Length: 262
Length: 262
DNA sequence: ATATTTATGATTGAATATTTCATTATAGTG
DNA sequence: CACTATAATGAAATATTCAATCATAAATAT
Image 1 (spheres, rainbow over the protein chains, first blue to last red):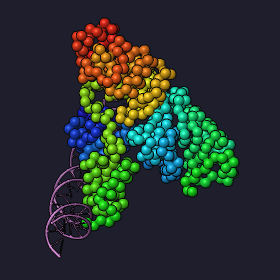
Image 2: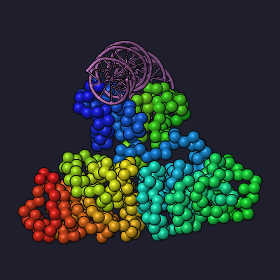
Image 3: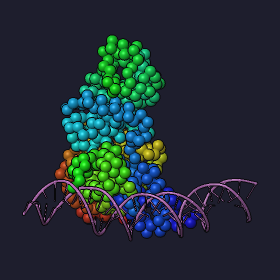
Image 4: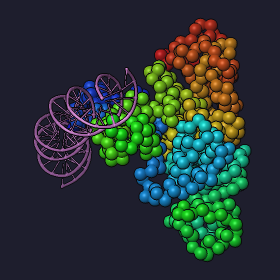
């Protein structure tokens, strides 16, 4: 390889730096600044685009929306296969929210979509422990966003730990939408992660009405850590009619069932 | 004019809606969805670009980063100014950090640069109330990131309010780097925002050594809300030698002075 | 009714992007 | 140390997209 000034990685990082500072860069600027060919400049921009860090424009590159401090906010819609289902769940959830409400949202893809559905609302407050949800909603000044504190788990952008729980103690939430990994009559709602389970539990304690949101693949499944029994729920929102037995039990426990196809 | 479905304005608004929701749109999607020619589709995107509402890409348009629901994030703009000075301040600050330290960072451009300088460190803990700093550092698993809770102020990504202060009560910070808007002998350090001032005050209470970081344009200036007198500081880091009187006073008060040019 | 303005679609030359292939440096292997 | 394999780069050919221009038809004004 004919390295002139530095490695490919260095160059791309510098290009990204430039874009983050200036907002955009032209192909010619890349060529001149790094004394490389147009082909290389394009390849660098292409690589950065693939990494979600740059959006390519005609004759250059620019800073994409949804990029915070050079980092992509994950959970973008394309990635998800159950996007339609989750989107319809999110729409239904959002329809239950009224002006003046104080809403709680745990982390997760479905709750993230609920946040997006609430994005253009006025006069609501959203309490969440998910940084990406907070960022999404902060775009709208009419939505008050309260983020819990805590240790940042980089993989899913959730704040967890004792600090998160401590923060929640000071809050009172009307309606909380809880994203979960498993739902069954016997075990209630459950998640893969103990940290998340604990944080969710704590959030529930501070909430009047807890509504579990999940797609049909989660129904009848149990994840490792139980968050709450079905009796603790105000309602559930899902995309497929639950089985007869489940439906009966839920009715008996006065758990409201919202199905998107209804 | 041969209006098919609606006016030019309607169409452009719908295109914008689509882009805001989906993040981007292709030229072909515009053509198909609105049954117009490519020329018209391009013209619409061009108009939206001129209005600053869309960034045009190769073969389409996308949501621009500078625009968030019609408002701009001032954070990245500010970063341009005095970048070199701030970067050198950040480097000096980072050099004071050792393995095992628990570092506090308030929000601000300079502190953000400190975070970036600390990004590849090992075994340090960073406590911050700035979401963008947390996101930046969370890329590295060897840096433990603790975010305070609080109300998210969308303009600068800072978490403020009683909740932030409540979170800080549970934490003990070794060295804190505080970004400020004004510094003078009489008033000490000050900021534009009362919320930020209060949060900074609280963070100071939980910190052994507080170091104020600021570029020379902040020296000798007072902002609206005082955070602390100079006597409360362990040190300052700035890019220009302070005046003789100031230097004398700082020496007398045993405030360490770090200047990047030294 | 006629003229004017505006929006649109089509065409063409220019700019940009993509693909492919040859070259050279780096890293690894015996 | 030579040899190979790999990765990065540059150059050239091809394909795509864009910008500018002009003609036409609808809406508006006179």
